[in-house]
Image (cartoon, rainbow, N blue to C red; front, side):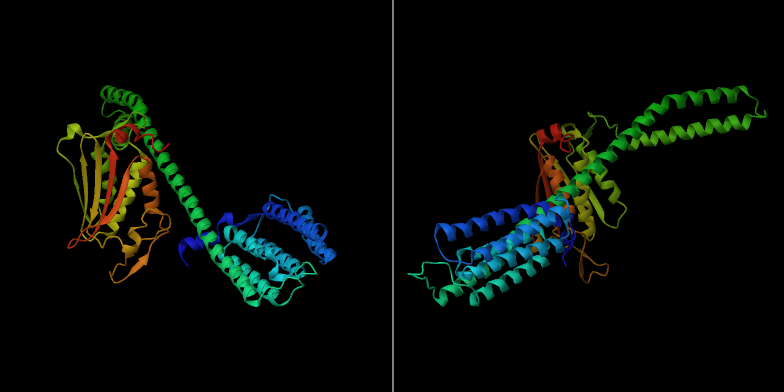
Length: 440
């Protein structure tokens, strides 16, 4: 089973709210009652009135029982919701049996419960419900009461027409059910992927805040630690070397020096976390590249030599994470080398990541950036491929980078070269102005 479908099977939104089914059934009860009364009293067509009303009353009684037994805000498990929808199909089948079978134009209401199932329940319940609805429709072709009509001029529909009605119901249940499921599933996957993106952003922002707090703490602790070091040095000079506490004073001074070295390293590795902390784009790229330099793949970074005109923007966790994800993917697939090329002018900033791996698969290339599009990774022996992850990495990276104003394109190198190309392009003014605001 594909990872996306497996995730969808257990998704919490698959639990339907009872109030939704109860409200829809009350709407059906009102509509069915009105139709029966209008046909019997308004059009004066003969039909088994009390039997029809009894079937409708059973549906109303079920609603009342559900209202008394459960809280309407309760969410039903998919199997229970499927049983309630199956009851609706059966109740509609009984009414159609009493009023002409598939000759009744309301026979197309069989599609209603199946469509609701397709948008709210796992696929297997929709398939079972669709089979049940088709079975009921098939039975009604052969067994039903006469269609309520004028006795003086009875309506007789040819068998080939009834076969067409049955076939249209079957196709409508199949086609519209699959279409509704596909649209709903794509919306659900997109919502899940966006939630994952928000979680990543929160994590990156939290790490960035910790980074800034560490730098601020190092800065604030620097002054009292300097005072301790000065006093420890004076005490060391004032106390004779063979004094009882001489070793303790020397130890105190050495530990204070060690603390200053640790705080110095924290200051070097941390950003200030301030809103106006600006980072050159080459420094930002080096920060992204640094964690991947210890692998067997060489990473070559190049940029124009005119650093005076280099774009400078606020350190944005969204850009750091997005670039890091794209670079990690390039390193994973590369055979020997990854190139990161940065170019800029007065109007634009462009970053290109190229690897010498197998490139993007043709069936994946057109869909990269969509949620749950799973890439493939070579096994260690290089003989086969295996699926990796749920396919959210590129989606999250693309979403975060596009929020920062970047336009992203994915391509493969032209033969005889091989490998993937990922190109990011910003308007320079947008990068320098909004880089720090894109994550908010």
